[in-house]
Length: 95
Length: 491
Image (cartoon, chains in turn red, yellow):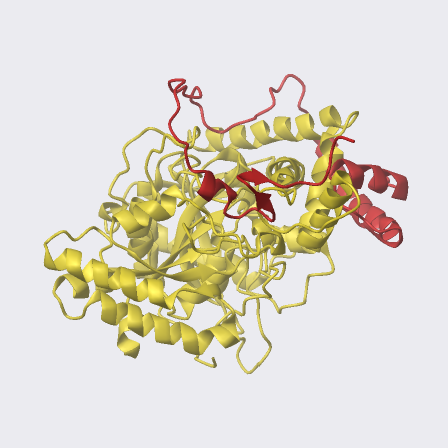
């Protein structure tokens, strides 16, 4: 299926990656090429086959619902691009 | 001190235990080798000489007190995908430039618990997305090998290109690596080293920077089969911090090396004999079959009919998981932030600037195949094909104990050769990606040289949790191959 510039614009928005207008068309061509190659999956008969989401045949373990970590504000904030008074500083979200 | 860096991990551990040299001497020899080589090879993105010497001294003290661990004093390189506490960890991405994790990955913590010494962080394709190490934000790694009579720089493969190059050039005794579609095995094949991707769940993924969580698995790149077995034993083990980590005992993998393989049934999958495959690779494969026959194995043709669909299925599943995993890089809590006019503008600018071209391509594919209206047609379809591929293996393993295949469809190629054609690049993983989808162990060992004098690898694929058998077979093949070639030093 051909992916056009509008689709790239929409998907880039979903992925929160800025793609410049001039780059939309070349990216659309590239993705169309890759998706065309992927289309061969349609040849495989998968009727009645359950999707395989994991190759570990175990039930996911549950742990006790107790606090196991914390009180490490300094470590949590150490890599923040901006922080103040123990908080992450982010662009204004609510007017 | 060249002799100290030429050693295998096993020989170094023996030398340390007989006090022929100290961990500090060993670390210093590697530190100088790295300082001399890295401007040419670019295998390390971060050298940590002070930490190496400090860890080596502590190791010598432990040994003096009689507290030596299984890797006591061994100088190891760490792929930059593993978070190392207080030491920059970038996964080869600009978006993590300067990121110093406040915690340690379980795999590296296991190595330090066993006495290993860290030399530095190894270069890699950005977020492990690549097969040539050319997508790294820190520049490509060069393969220490060059074709006979040529000065052309070659790729060490990827994504664990730094790990493979460093081990092949004797810059570390062995290295950690990771494999999502072939990222341990293809670089090992390109550099004349041994690499194994163990069964999914053997190694904890805690603190490994995520690419595609249902496929990512850590493993070693080493100079010999025995070295790979020693390092994998330390890296493995159950970890409550990774819910997919298997709660089972780790065998002593090195104890399998040297065992007889008489009577084992080895499968040769028809579908791995590709049209247009270089004849020297078919020939090497046939040689491998002869070695196994000579060792008393029974060779059987098997069919894995869905092999050709593995790569296209992978290029839905891996990007889908990556687009979700990489959503965390939003410029708010760590990593790069590029300010914009609004919150969304900041997100978009940060990610546009922080991610390289291949990462963007895959995140966009992932977002596309997961988006409304396409989820069933692409993502669920790929997950169904994935089960078909796993069933192919189940069926084959009813008749055989392991499979023998080539590792990669070519020898190392020139840097720059395939960057403009994503699909040509993806085809590097045609023989390796199937085991990631099925969760099975795969081991690559050097088996011979191409006509141009470049290393070529063969791959062994085993049943889930049967790495031991792979180590036994690989040990026998290593003896038969007598692969002793080393790259001629130009760096």
